[in-house]
Image (cartoon, rainbow, N blue to C red; front, side, top):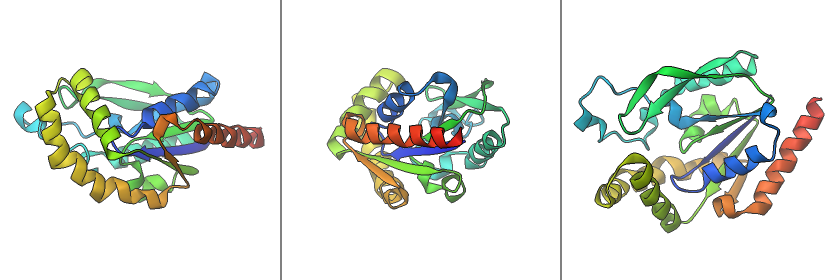
Length: 205
């Protein structure tokens, strides 16, 4: 099994990079494990408090469960991936069954902050982008997908997204084996990643 970690700031283009890599591989060979599925359940606190959750701080994630799931996949075991809703800030009672495959991509802004998780990765990638580009993507995403207003998005960006990026996310560049500037627009870097994966799969045959 080849485990790839893809990190980077909010709105950096990680999802596009992941999508382009996945599209280049047969579906039966690759699975994606999103960090976002492993946010801690907040159903025990009032809705007003849930909306103040700092999703950009490592403490918001249940890393122990994510690490356990990656280890199980490496051992050839299936897992039940949680389903998390940003609208309600809760986990669903339902889960997504995930089977072990030859390529596992772990994707999320904070995945390189956790050493036990990093240690499970065969290659670590950091997707980089200018702060203004990331902000424009965050505004669009949070309005269309998470039901937030422009004012709330900008307020959250200044209070949590920006400072957390500088404190926790940007520093994880030093753990990356490959840094991809310009996110999903960097086709050369994505092609390099495709070649690395294809070579690894050939060696595993």
